[in-house]
Length: 117
Image (tube, rainbow, N blue to C red; front, side, top):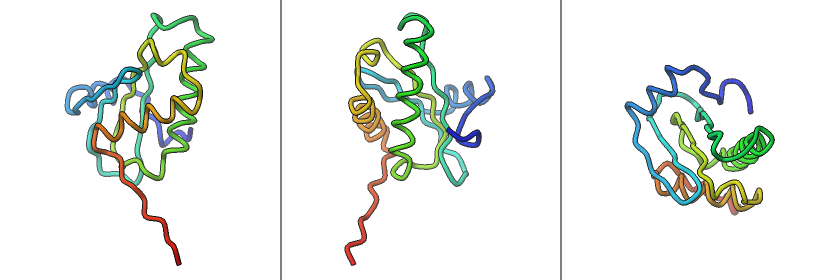
């Protein structure tokens, strides 16, 4: 994921927690904060409770790939996505579908029109 698509500083994470709203499903909690930018920015969080470093890094890789696939349909806001325990057993496709569901619940999913000409 490109650097401009990431939240990196603690202050950025805290601003999303403080000023944003949250929605959740079984696998993820998504905090959203409106922002004036051309693309979304995201911070990922996977707790040590979810497994060792290998499992946590795998979860983050799956989340990043899912966001890359979903990028055209995601509104340009700031996001913090927190993985929950059930997410650790998901496949790539299941992670993508679960994140898509959470983003739709957060009302930041914009369905792109397909040009049929």
